[in-house]
Amino acid sequence: MSEANEGMDVGYVAHLARIDLTSEETALFQGQLNQVLQYVEQLNELDVEGVEPMAHAIPVYNVLRKDELGLSLDHADVVANAPSSSDGHIRVPKIIDQ
Amino acid sequence: MADLHKLTISELTEQLASGTCTSVDIVNDVLASIDATDGKVGAYLTIDREDALAQAKAADEARAAGSQLPMLGIPVAIKDLLNVKGQPCTCSSKILEGYIAPYDATVIAKLREAGAVLLGRVNMDEFAMGSSTENAALGKTSNPWNLDHVPGGSSGGSAACVAADEAIASLGSDTGGSIRQPAAFCGCVGVKPTYGRVSRYGLTAFASSLDQIGPLTKTVKDSAILLEVLCGHDKMDSSSIEMDVPAFAKNLSNGTSLAGMKLGLPKEYFVVGMDPEVEQSVRDAVEHCKSLGAEIIDVSLPNAKYAIAVYYIIATAEASANLARFDGIRYGMRIDGKDPIELYGKTRAAGFGSEVKRRIILGTYVLSSGYYDAYYLRAQKVRTLIRDDFTEAFKQCDAILSPVTPTPAYKLGEKSDDPLKMYLDDILTTPINLAGNCALSLPCGFASNGMPIGLQIIGDAFQEETILKVGHAFEQTTEWHKKRPSL
Image 1: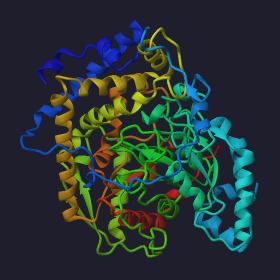
Image 2: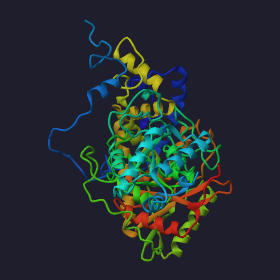
Image 3: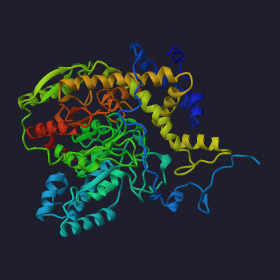
Image 4: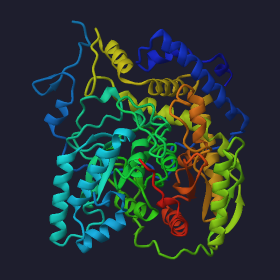
């Protein structure tokens, strides 16, 4: 965790997370999150060599079910939730500029 | 008011069965109680008056036709992160303003099938991220025992409405203590079921490997009744387990003996910095269990002290992925931009509160290239060590007793500027979510300032019956759960 000591670049990570922060927020979170990262450094005290990582709590893997027809969400209800829509479609900003 | 709002599920079910009251009477009484006190408590975000009375009327008709469903005619409040078809589901976030749920969560469908009356939606920390319900964009909730104090969180509204007799019971969700801690702060009963017991379909996901839905009630017996309704395999949640649901309520004997029961006391759970009144109340509760015939043995959970560090890596990592869906495209708020990237950034900046932003950023960081092994992978390995501690402990005992929180409820504003300080309060509850087993919180005393204190009864995976039995025996032989706040 040696990299962690340098702290994270909050502005850059916020960009990766697609959250535009104000400069005040960036400064505030920088301090607060570096404090949290310092706190989690204590995990380095432990020897975890050979320990299996645990992704979830129950021994259930690759759950499959039959591919059967069933009821889907009502199309109109779903589209009604979109902030912008027309003719039963969700409107989004242009992605390819052509 | 006929004071029906002050009664429990089991008491009201008896009255309904004998015909001394109707569900419409109960709902009217609860609505009157909300009108009288929720201006101070602030538990509710939305109340469905007409709809609740219509459901109550239907329940009364069903009973007249012979139905004896387990929750028939009982009004229940819902934490605002569970989808109820046709209703808002804000998660106390501005980003979900205007969203109307197009389907019922599985637990909501189960409540309907069991005859319950859905009363309204209660406040919480935004996306269940918080321990005080102060991270709520759409309302402010107080502790019914002292309005200057926090109700706990994130299921703060769920606990406050039950404690204030503004609902007979409620649903909450628990990712790191979010049912048990507010239950302890507000003096009610809350259960975090074993991971996989209750379907998470329709629960707005925070940390998918930790989240569980559970009941908040006035008594352990009521929690048993409600839990039985909520549990069961669901094909819509592949992490819900295919296992029979025990008859929790029926199997709860009226006996108060704990003879033959071994209860473990983890020395690591009585940490430096624990409030002396909390420690004393819990130690008195342990003595009480001993007097009921339980054998008390020392157990060790040496890695529990790492739980906060592990939790705030794993929970934020999962949250950063889960909350990626709130991007202003398909539902909720949208702030337009010249391209999708700008739209996402502006929408998420305006829609999320500070704590949610902090956690998404932290989670994004611990999963990012170059840091994944150092943080996320290491945390997953320590999670295994924490789980193994419980596995060892449960070889020696049937259940574990501990405090729920290091302190009773604190004042509003006291910790809201210091995220790490707030996180550290979850030290006694997060290990159970990481390990995936079950735990119950119930009242076991009061601090000298009048705030409730909770006892945590921790069970092995799928041993809800054991913790309900211990809790019920404790409750039958103590008076703590009968005390109500004066509002």
